[in-house]
Length: 191
Image (cartoon, rainbow, N blue to C red; front, side, top):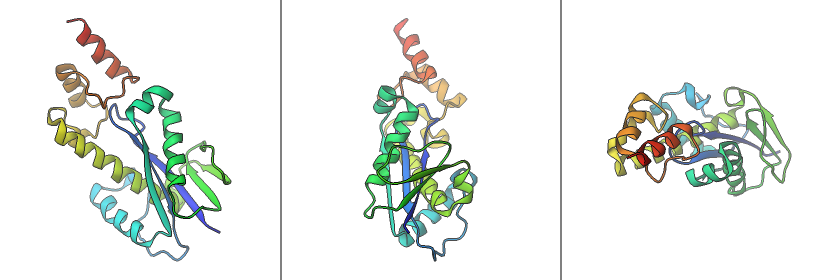
């Protein structure tokens, strides 16, 4: 039976895509240290991502853009990214285990597992791949827009990010449906 783990990264940031990972691990995998990606350092995630890609039966990462987040809302965009990740797998899983309390609409049976990223190896692996991809997008945005500090805060609504939003205004990759970004647009229209 091929069990696929699915998790997302990037629901909270004010900028960029939301990512989802989908991973089918062999039952005899030897990857040590799998856990919720938020409980791992960036260095640990990067090391584990290599191991996951080497040992997984199949893996995929997909995303939904900031424009899609704005169009259909963050929850639906997350579900879309998860559907895309599962659909991009080279092998169709028998069942999908999703971190959280809901699952996307899929062609195969699926179960939501709260805190599954800490208890199911395949979900932990998906969490790590999604987070590594999300961080890579933040670094790419940082190269294009260094004044925002995306490499430091990864797009979350930190004081540094909010100050940059106020000073420089939103970029096309900002999620205009998120309140701080809407406020920054409104502020700029006053002048």
